[in-house]
Each structure stands twice: as C-alpha cells, then as structure tokens.
Image (cartoon, rainbow, N blue to C red; front, side, top):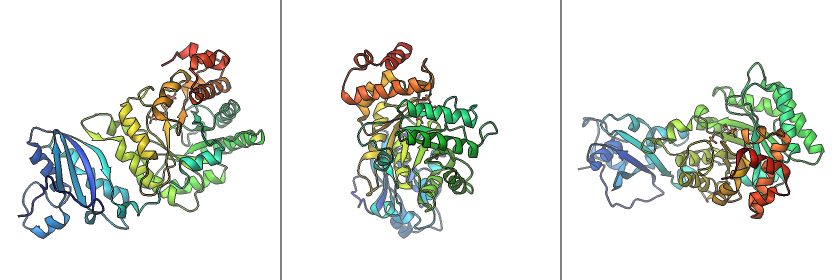
Length: 410
Ligand code: RUB
C-alpha cells in the first residue's frame, strides 16, 4: 500500500527537493505531515479513483522525519518542471496550497535543499560579491552605502547631488529606495542621467561608486526598463524580489543585454518571514535569489537595526549568500534598515567583513549633512575593520563624534 510516511528513510539528495517545515496544529503531527505531503504532490483531501500506487510511489512526497513541531518532507525531482515552470512552479510545490489548509493551522517553510539537477538549471549571480568589489576596487573592507532619503520627494537634480555628496564622503554605493520608480517628481530617465553624471564626476576625481536604479515594474516591462536605464548610464539596477517575483530577478540576470549588477531589495518580505510560526523564512528566499542571479541581497542587520529580525536567522541568510552552493558566485549580503555609525562595530562583529552596510537616515540625518554623514559611516566601518573601539576612533574623527553624539552606540 503506497503511503506518504517514510519516517527514518534516507533518500538520495540528488533525487529530491528536501524541505523543512514548522507546523502548529491540533492534528497529530503524523497526520498533519502526511496531509502536507499529499496535498503538495499526488493526493488531496479524499482518496481518488484516478490515482494508482505507482503514481504515489513515483511522485508522492515523502515525510522523512518528525521532531517536535518540525517535519522534513522530500519531493521527488520528477515533480518539478524541466525547462518551463522555474521558481514559480517550485514554489507552488514546496510553498503552495499548504499554507491555506484549514486542518493544519500555522505552517512555516524553514529551509530547502535543492538537488544538483535543479541547481544546474540556474546560472546564479553574474557579478556576485567579488564582481561588485572589483567594480568598486574595494577588495577587503565592507562596502558602505546609502539609500537616498527621503525615499520619495527629491527631484533628479537633488537626488544626484545627494549621490555626489555621499560619494565625496567616501561611500561606495547608493541606491533608490523601494517606493521610488518613475514618479512625476523624479522621472526615472532624468534621475538616471543626473545620477550617472554625478558618478562620472566622482570617477574623474578618483572615487568609484555605483548607484542602483530601481527598475521594479510589471513583468512584461522590466527587462526593457533595465535596458533603458542602462543606456541612460545606470551602473547598477535594483529589483524588489517579493513584489516583482523571483522570475523577474532571473529575467534580468539572464538577459544578455543587461550588463550591470542587480541589487535585490526584499520589501514586503515581513509578510512572509516575520511570524516565527507561519510563512516562509528568509533562508529559502535567499537561496532562490542566489539561484536566480541576484548580485546583492538584503539579509537583515543581525539584531541591531530598525527592522525586526532574529540575529541567528540573519546570520543564516548571510551564510546562504556566501557558503558554497551549486558552484554559484557569492551574493553580497546587504545589512540595511535603521543603521547608524554607532552600531556598525556590533554588526560587523557578527557579520564579518564581506558585507555591504547601508544607511539612509544614518547618513542623511547627520547634523553636518550627507557628506559628513557618509564620512561618519566610513569612519565607523574603518574603526570596525581595524578593530578599534568606535568611541576611541571618534576622538580623532569629528564627523563620527557628531554621529555618536546624535544616535549613541550599541
Ligand atoms: C533603509 C530602508 C530600507 C530597509 C529595508 O533606510 O528603509 O528600505 O533597509 O529593510 P534607513 P530590509 O537606513 O533610513 O533605515 O533591509 O530589512 O529589507
């Protein structure tokens, strides 16, 4: 009799997509896990006259283990599309109907491991962390960036001035925020051209910097828009992965006409990731972004910034960007959200140096303005890089001193 329960069975990791779920249910865990395995593969709420033992044996998901509220379920690779389908089809298997099953209660996809044959269908980042460092000629120190603030409202000229000032203060990166695309007060063409001029001016003064232009838009327009901003001088593009979809990241990364790195923002991820008992943890999202070709990805601030996030989970996201996976290049992990100079030491102690640290308010809120705010951020990163306590470093760096006076230390 074919069944979904295979407790204790060792499966060939090259033949299955293996998922870990956390389940909150009033059902016995065996029943809940079997219901998930059935719903997401060959079964449904009742027995079927149309299925066979062979179908369940060949294509049925297998419940491999149950420990407390956690279960590991393996989906045969045959359940996944080959050419057509991509991440949307993967997600509909491993993270589809199961969240809505009335009988289950809460459910969270914690992690996923893909077999080689699926990883081989993806190209991963074209530039990755190393490629970004090469573009910026910054081999070792963390990259230091800003998000232009206010996130909406500045016209193109002021946006470009902000970027120039940030670069003059030493920042390596800047970016549009997630809500800025092509509003009337700041048309994307004018903004891209003005920012490109600011970056060229910085380059002529010996400073390399990139700014990510947000190309998040409808699926049928995104590659075309990226091509356009590239032709207007963009050195990097940004896409919001949750609102635009993984397929949008992949379309940009794999289109031969796009020749600049992709910064991946994750706005709206909190709707999926924040509840520890329900949704999808950031870890599978990070792995999918890496497969799809994101070059840099927001991973959290390891417990110090304004956005909620468990430091251990943020570290797991960071490792998923950098650990060997399918021969893909490393993704640059981006720590962003409520960052200011006095917290950088604590953050870098947890993250290590292969990160991009970003601050919007923590730059534009500096009493001396954007350039001094950028200098204070760079000084804090230098202090962390050299292992010097930030308060001591501030004794000889007035911009940092002012930032510490305003926001304090962590
Ligand atoms: C940063 C900001 C970004 C967040 C997103 O601005 O608003 O959109 O980093 O969060 P500020 P996450 O530096 O002023 O807080 O990186 O967690 O996705």
